[in-house]
Image (cartoon, rainbow, N blue to C red; front, side, top):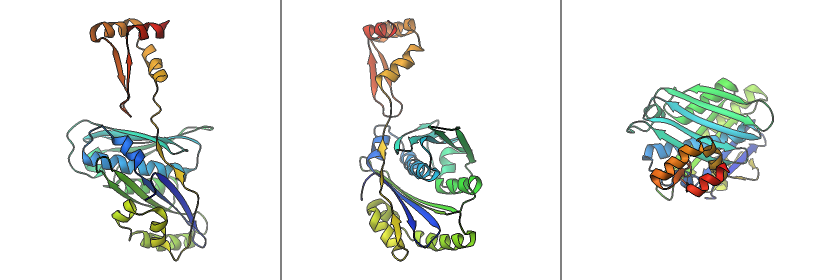
Length: 281
């Protein structure tokens, strides 16, 4: 399997577009050392795949955030990314996790998709979590917002240090409505035959050949997916300025240093008394 790549493809004679995402390294970096329960790891893996697919599908330059929030054991889970496929994500729990479906994990809640383009207006779409799977929730989003028939297939392996997340995406092209629906139905039936192990273990070309060998998918150059937190010492200093010098010095007097840990990558930034004085000087 070629790691951490997004593949887009079209069909010469069918009015449908598709995407295939396969992620390993970025997924492992995202969940490393967080001690998430297995169902939460799987949920974050699916959310990561979904965000990559949405970023490629919605065609914008800028940033995207896909967040699940509700009253269940998982208070929220979010993936932040951009059009360059730089991704980071986190989940927060408020009670012991039981179950594995979206409803069991997140409870009564919403999926919030926020797009902040480099140029233009910020956009936010909110979809109730009315289905048991994340793929069905996103399919509902496209049905409501774009009126385009869409299907997604997800697969995750949460093995520590060797985690993998993959996803397949199909969507009709808004051309000839009846033809595109017929084309979609044909490809959907083929895609339904994909096995979890195939999505996780086989390289993209093998997967697409097995599924659509008679339909000649035209695959574009893949786009790399990376885990990129974005935290830095400078950004941490900017946050500390808002706390105030005296309060920080009081913390140093009590604890020896001020330690700030990034929620996403868990990197720790340490500041001693002289560091604090230098910040405010």
